[in-house]
Length: 112
Image 1 (cartoon, one colour):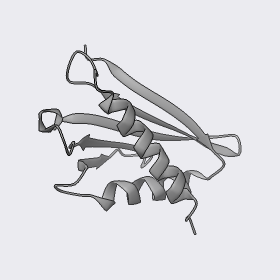
Image 2 (cartoon, rainbow, N blue to C red; image 1 turned 180 degrees about the vertical axis):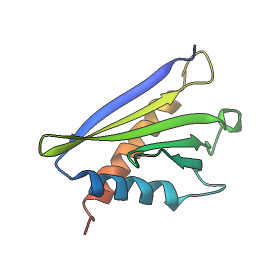
Image 3 (tube, rainbow, N blue to C red; image 1 turned 45 degrees about the horizontal axis):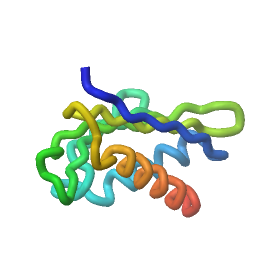
Image 4 (cartoon, one colour; image 1 turned 90 degrees about the vertical axis):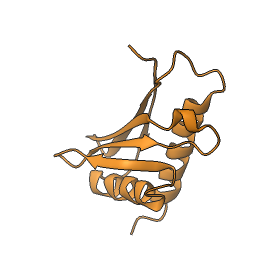
């Protein structure tokens, strides 16, 4: 079993606003960018993507899952990465999670 890195945040937004923002982030760098092969599950609130690192191509097949769940008057967003290696010595995965959540907060500031 691979090590998992996970973080959850709560935001005062609707599910539609959160999924709109998540889609925009994942679509921003398709193909040879940071996120590849994005798959949206049936309910539309779970996103699976592959992270393609810029500096270390051996980590090219790192899966990341983003799940948005409605809570009372807010949304809970969980980002999870399963490391394909034994550890994360350089802290790549935690940084990917931080970058994604930072982008999500910024994007939600622009929700119409």
